[in-house]
Image (cartoon, rainbow, N blue to C red; front, side):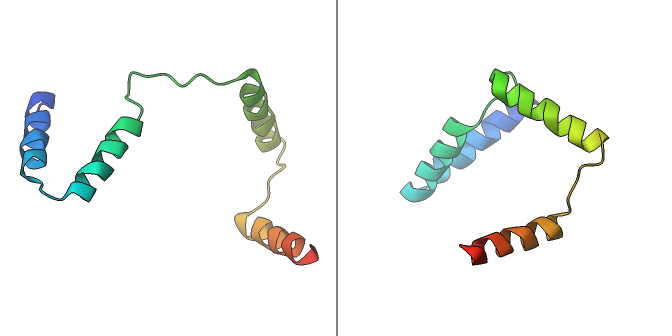
Length: 80
C-alpha cells in the first residue's frame, strides 16, 4: 500500500501532465470543495433535533419505503 507521500507525489505528477483546462478547473473545484478528514462539520441545534427525531421514528417503526414515497410524491405533484 502506498504511503500518503507517494500518493500525493503520484497525483502531482499526473496533474502536471494534464493539459485540459476544463478538467483542471473541475479538479480544482472538487479539491477546494471537499471536506478533509480532519474537518468537523458543525450541525445547528435544529439539525441535531431533526436527526434525533429521525432516530426516534426509526426506533418506533415509522418508516416508508422509497417506492411508497415516490408514489406519494407523484400523487402530490399530479394534484397540483
